[in-house]
Image 1 (cartoon, helix red, strand yellow):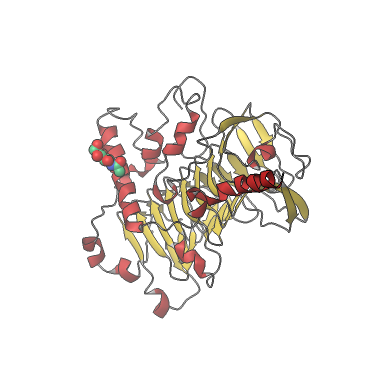
Image 2 (tube, rainbow, N blue to C red; image 1 turned 90 degrees about the vertical axis):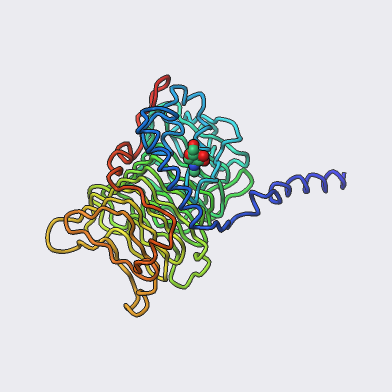
Length: 408
Ligand SMILES: *[C@@H]1O[C@H](CO)[C@@H](O)[C@H](O)[C@H]1NC(C)=O
């Protein structure tokens, strides 16, 4: 009996010892990752020119990987191999079963019913979560996800809205794809279940659309996000290995905060790719606001901001390539960038660079540090993607209307 107990304890511990769990703050060589992203964009662009030869020719390397498969619905888990950038190793629920959400309710966040979204996300095993029909899910409390989960809204119109939204806290390998996340509110002062064995007390939450707290290997793709209480997507407290791609964001003030505080140095390891997003109507600032880590911002379409587009503090590295920046009308707020909370004598050393960005309506980018020296571009073997591609590459940003049996 004692032996059996010992044995089952070892079995319980085993998943914690496997490599995917150990590598919770994986630091990648940033310039190599950037180079690979640029090569993939190049390849997709070339394939587009050859009109479908080797690809379906969207020119978007993530979409080319799956969107032209008319059987996408039977091959859902192939999406997991389509990410690029720092979050490319996020496999989500690729190696698990498909789970279908049939119940849009969330009556009891401590004892979620089978068939609900909350029941799926707390499970220990990998799951690829899909939806039986169109639904609006108004959560009662934050949705606290467990590792190795994909939330895949393709084939249905899925809204997580009107209540608290998604929390990715101290977990790894999460994919969020094809859902609408909006009107997110604060939750808290309540018990919420986070695994089948455990529930805990949650204090009041920020009310983010997607809150990543000490999370790694996270990919948020083709979501539509708007109008939340705090950030649309915030990543803090040692989060890293993140890709935020193909999203359509609108109607929000503080769009993305990446980095906890100026003194929280664990965020030096934060590495985030922001690619092919459309930052649209009604946005004000923080697309993103960065601290400490490395941020690759590539081929995004910035059509609206009221204060600034990209900013940060505490010496982040910002590598802006091939974006289109359309400044607001009027005399002010033409500057894309904002160096925050430091005197010029300090921020002039922060490595912020702009390569191949398209500046419209008076937009300008204030480069600094190594990024400001003309030798930088020469020293780098990278070439920025032409910003002229941005409108076609981001044309389908946001949740897609996918139908079974045809291309998405
Ligand atoms: C780009 O295409 C070339 C030629 O097909 C291939 O060898 C290379 O691996 C591709 N690069 C990436 C990053 O996918």
